[in-house]
Image 1 (cartoon, rainbow, N blue to C red):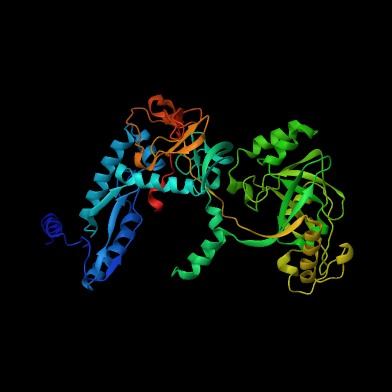
Image 2: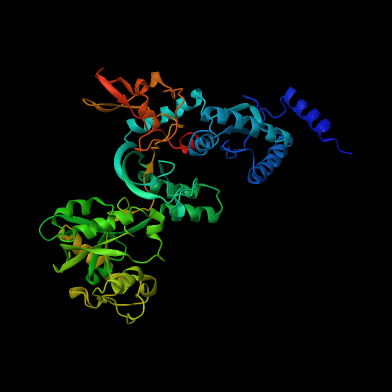
Length: 504
């Protein structure tokens, strides 16, 4: 009969005493590195998903060792962030104590399962000697112009009292607590991930990812090539739109701008239906970005009365609407609407009783729009498009773009769905952001030799009601001196997201 305690303990002791699973620095054996996603030690222990993925990788690690490789198979703990903090709050213990207890549980379970991790290289993202380098990285981002602060619309959980990523707010509810997410504006630290969109796309050619994984990345980055066009507003002001279908520009019958964008704020003093506009903005704030952009949602909106746009070519006055499917932090925050050649615009125009102008021949527009996937490459020609009438769609694309460029109001651009990374969280349990604000000098990076900036050891760590990080209440920690002028200054009180320590 198999005696679990006797046999397992015997061999696990042997493995540990003889350092069987430790990778050897400077070994003459060929190296082999196996990286598994290290877990959040935030619950009562491992779940079946952990066991499934770690077992498969463990089999690979053992095989490679038997094949003569020097295998590096480490394990660590992704212990900062919302999961650990919320577990601590729920169980009324300090996050550092919760993490310590949960790590012990996770590690004991992993050892009992016989996983061949190199425990000599164990670490936690909450170790000061580790997050020193997470903070160091942030300083490099800042010094190279990649980290910046901006006021933007964010997903906000009223219960967790913190900013959420789009993934954490999928379906319009907080992944952690199930509360309905609202949109609000907050000043956030950002990383310029969008600057690397093209590099990330091209880099996929050098990877061995499965095709379906590459396709997921391609769709996430979301490159589209088109034309950006400037649009004037009657009485002053302007905005820009981006389109991949410049051939349909003569079919514009209205524009739609973001309820959470900067443009509507600028126009608000001139708006005739201000109360209606403000109510719509308030209702939009209750929806997540994902909810707003799903195509199967109703096309809600409201006309911005008293404000008209000027068609960039014809000079005709065109109405402007607010629409919640336009996001203030994506693209230009405004879109052109061509009801006859875009299904979303078609449904929107019907719902709001707006004019439709067909500008491409080949099918009558009755029950649905005649879209590019139906007319491209079919020899279809433009109609109702002034001097471009009679040109094929492909001919018209270049000709209209050239005209807009000569007018000085259009330019070819690449657009990407991927946006900059919101890098602030209003939580206690995270890496402190090593930035200092001085009224005289503005934002200043900490000196690298002063890292790590330690998280203060305090009893109160629950989220605040005013949306500030709990660190804001710790005045002895917040108040400091400016590294530039030596005058009085304050530390940044937001912390980094839980991905900060695990991503690198």
